[in-house]
Amino acid sequence: MTGVQSNIHDTEVAIIGAGPVGLFAVFELGMLKIRCHVVDALGEIGGQCAALYPEKPIYDIPGFPSVNGEDLIKNLARQAAPFAPVYHLGQQVVSLTAQRSPSTEHTVNGEPSTVKLWQLTTDKGTVIRARAVIIAAGCGAFGPNRPPLAGIESYEGTSVHYLVTQREQFRDKTLVIAGGGDSAVDWANSLGELAKKIYVVHRRDKFRAMPESVARMKALEAAGKIEMVVPYQLAGLEGDGTRLSAVTVATLGGQTRQLQADHLLAFFGLSMDLGPIASWGLNLHLNHITTHPTTAETNTPGIFAIGDIATYEHKLKLILCGFSEAAFAAHAIYKLLHPNQALHFEYSTSKGVPGSS
Image (cartoon, rainbow, N blue to C red):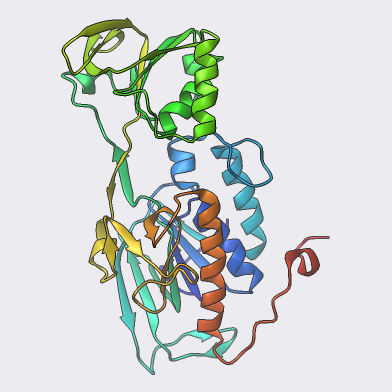
C-alpha cells in the first residue's frame, strides 16, 4: 500500500470504504487512468468480508465456485495494486464539503483545474481534495442485532457469537445457530461437517436465505448433521456466566425445550448507522443512498454511491451487483473529469494492466 506523508492530499477520486466493492472501484478507475485515495474506518482493508466473515465461503462470485472472504479481499487488493491507490485506514470521514474557488490549487493529469472540488476531512485530521467521491461504505457503521436475552453480554466472545472469524474453534462442539437468513444458513452449512452437532433455531419453517443454500441445509438435516428446531425462538441461556451449558427455546404457545450447547451463534442481521453520511444532503431511503442505476450518481453531481449502501428500483444486494456499479461509476466519473474527450474504451483482454505480460 502506498505510504503518505502530508495530511492534505489532492487526487481525482476519493473512495469512502475499502470493502470488496470499494477495492474493485480502484481497479475500474485505474483502468481509465484515474487516480484515487481510499478511506476506511476499519484498520485494514476488506470491510465486512474481513471484519465479519473472513472464513465464510462465498458462492456467488463469478469464476469462483467458492471463495472465502479473506481470499476474495486478497485477490481484489492484488488486482488494485498496479494503480497505486493511497489508503487512509482507521479513519472515518466526518465532513464532506464542496469548494469552488479560482484560487484552489489542484491539478488533473498535470494541468491546473479550478472546477468544483470535494473536500473530505477525517477524524484524524486527514484532508482529501477530489473532483469526485464514491461512497462504498457498505452498511455504514455496523453492529450486530443482539437478541434480548438476560445476561447475554457476559457470554459474548466466549460462548455467544455474532460472527465467525475462525471455524476451527467450533470443531467437535455442539452449536445452536439462530436466525433464518443467509448468514445463519450459510454457517450451518459450513460448520455442518466440523461441529459435533448443530441445532438450527428459527421461528418458522420458511427461511430467507438463497434456495440452494436452504436445500444444502436440508440435505445436512437428512444426513443427521443438523437438527431443525422449528418453530422456536431463543428464550434463555444456561451456564456459569462465562461458558454456556444450554440454550432454552420456546414456541409462541409457550412450549419450551432446553438444548445442550457449547456455543450460540445468533444471526439477526446488523444494525446500520450512516453516521456523518446522513448529514451530507444526499437523498436517503431507509438508511440507503438513492442513486441512478446506470451511473451510480446520487442527487448531488460528483458524488456516487455503490454497493450495499446504494439503492434504486429493483436493486439486488449482491457483491457482483456492487462490482457492476463500480464500473458504472468509474465511466461516469471519466466523463465528469474529461467532458470534451471521447472515451475509446478497450477491453482488459486487449489493453492489459500495468505490469501485466
